[in-house]
Image 1: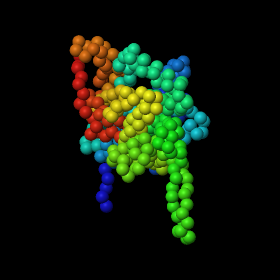
Image 2: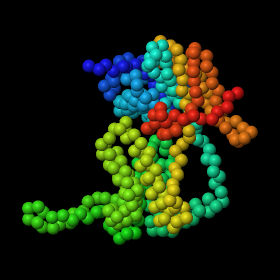
Image 3: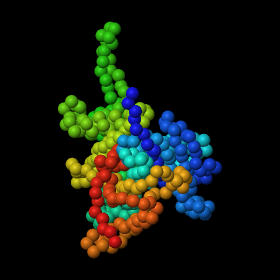
Image 4: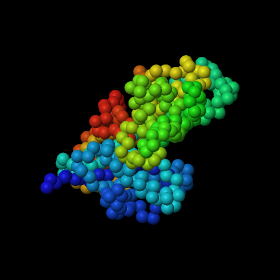
Amino acid sequence: METIDRCLYRVQGYQPLSVEIVAQTLDEVSIQKTLCKISIRSAQAESALQLQSGGSILAIEFEAESKLDLIEATRLGLSLLEDLLSAIALVNGSTFQTTEPLQVARLGAGKVDECEFLIFKRLSLRHWTEPITQQTVFKAMHLLAHWDGLESGHRLRRAALQYREAIGNLDDTAAFQRAYIGLESMEPLLAKAVDLTPGTEEINGYCKACGHQFTRKRTSLVGVRVFVMNSLNPDSAEENRKADWKMINKLRNDLMHGLSDPEELSDRPHKALIAAMHHLHAAICLASHAEDLVKDTYQLARGSSVYLLHGHYKTTSWPMLNEWEPAIEVTDFTWVPHEQHGFVPQVSLKCERQQDLEIRVAELGEPFSYATMDSIKSTRFEQD
C-alpha cells in the first residue's frame, strides 16, 4: 500500500468582528472530517478598541498532504474556520463576515527543519483614480432623466442598484447573485421588446399514450436569454453568447438550489460574474437610450492587488497556536510620493523573529478564490 506523506499546516485569518471566547484555543475539533486545532482571539487588547475597531485573529492547525499547494491549503483552512463560525452564528447569532487570509505556513515538507510560508497583504482600494468629469455627470443625468420619464424607469433603477452593489462586492459569488437579480429585474423589458411573455416559456409536447398535442408553460427568463444570446432561436446564436447564457444560468441554478459546495466552484463565479455584468450593463444602457455606453469589450474592476511575502526559515516547531505570529512583521500600506510614478504604496518589514530567513516579494496574479502557487508573479519593488 502506498503511503502518503503528510505534514503540518497553519492558516491565520482576520475576521472583522471582534469576539470574546472562553477558551482561546480549541483542541481536537473535527470539521469536514479533518481533525484540527483552532485559536480565536480579539485583535485588540483593550475593551474600548474592541468596540471601536473590532477584529479577531483566527488561526487553525491541521494535517494534510505534504504536496498540497500552499494557496489551496489557505482556502482549505479558511473553509474549516468558516464552518466553525457558521455553526457559532447559528447558536448565538454572531454577525460574522468573510474571513480574510493573513498567512499560511507548512512545516517539514521536503526538509524536516524547514518552514515555508506565505504572508498575504491586500492593497486597499480606497480611491478611484479616474476623475468624475463634467461629461460623466452629463451622461449620468441623461440616464436619470430616462429613469424618471420611462414607464419602466423603476425597473431600470432597480437593475442599476444591483449592478452598482455587485461592483463594490469583492466576493465573486455574492456579486454574481446581485448581477443575476439585476438581470431578473430587466426581464419584462427585454421580453416585451421581442414580443415574448415575460418570465414564461411555452413548451410544445404530446401525450405518449394517446398522441394528443399540448402546450405547457414553465417559468423562464425568456427575455434575458434572448438578449444574452442575441437571438430568438438558441440554435442559431453565436457560440460565445450561448456559452455565456449556459454559464450564467447553470451557476445560478447551482447556487439557488444548493447543488454545489463553495469549494467546488473554482473560477466559475468569477467568469460568470464578468459575463452577467457585461450583459446587465448593456441591457440597462440600451433600455435607457444610452447606446453610446455599450461596448463590445467589457472590463470589471475587482478590487486591489494582493501582495505576497513568500519565504522559508529554519525551525522544527511552532509556538502555541494563539501566540503564533508571522515570521516577518509587516506594516500597513501607506502611500508616498515617487519621482517617476506619482504615489506608490510602501510597507516596512521587520525580520527579527527567525534565523536563516529567505523571502521574496510577489503579487497574486489571479483571484484568490481559484489561485494557486503558479498564479504568483514577480512584482516591481524598491528597497530603502
